[in-house]
Length: 115
Length: 115
Image 1 (spheres, chains in turn green, brown):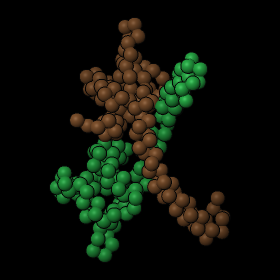
Image 2 (spheres, chains in turn blue, purple; image 1 turned 90 degrees about the horizontal axis):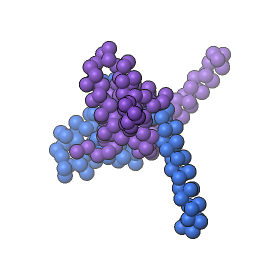
Image 3 (tube, chains in turn red, blue; image 1 turned 90 degrees about the vertical axis):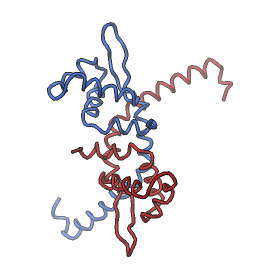
């Protein structure tokens, strides 16, 4: 069985599932509205499967509202993955500092005439 | 073929590969030193395969130093995934605000006697 963090990253490793999260970042949506834009390229069971992966990974929650099943983003599920990423921030900021230093040298050489 | 972001998240979806990144966050390491702690539970080819996944996903880079092959973290590879996560920050901060509000209510009810 996958550990929680692996399950989260695994769920995020798919462009359809990330597109679903992007849609849900605009607000709650019921399953059929959420599925609709994806039905040109895949079947409803395939869409449902993607939603199940997101739900099992704790990235979305489903609630029943009258006859609708509504989906929304579960922030806590994303937080653990974001916290994990955060501890590596120094590595990309370091790269950017180097890039910045390099760009300053280049700009300096060209006499700041290429703004 | 997987898109870049999917490849990154997929590479992160494994505890061994995350442990390798954690080791590399302490500094560059040659392949044999990096492999050593994992050889109790898996073969050297399995370790090498994990390193290849990290390298293909752009999360580490390998360089040759004299007769050693040295690995280090590639910050830029992590940055894209971190940027993607960042756009969802509001969702977990929102959850924590709600938790905070709830905790204040609970503390208030108990007359602040349980610090």
